Image (cartoon, rainbow, N blue to C red):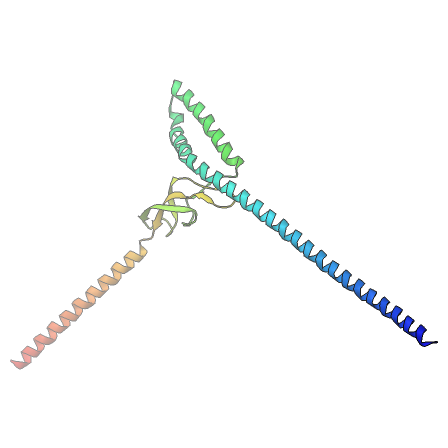
Length: 207
């Protein structure tokens, strides 16, 4: 084979290799760009979902805060209707109408997943309860709720209004403190008596 043909063949082989390298490089760049594009799409989708979730939570939070403003009205309805069974005549008819209004208000709360929760007999929880009075007694466990002054309400995510309650405080500790104090006083009195006895005996010996 002549030198000219060898050179031509080498050039062709070199050209083929260059084309293959360029093709591989192009494919690598394409896959890199494709991966970046897919990652960017995923990040944009996650951002969209996060913003949508935050917007939804903000709307729910605002709605719950508005509902809190209506809870005292429901409290007043319930307190007034607690005596409805004792009324007669036209007053009782009015009470039935107000009872229907109260039921509708409670339906609105239920539709928004807001419910009242029971507190009496449970242990005090600062996330759910607001202590309005501490009652010292040994008739109930220490820290238990003995009376509910106003109902608490919660949604699926949080307590929107804590229950106002009376909380029991045990008297045992106070009794122990008083017993210890009495014991200390008795011990001091015994020491004083012993000192006086010693002083008397010393004076007697001197005389």
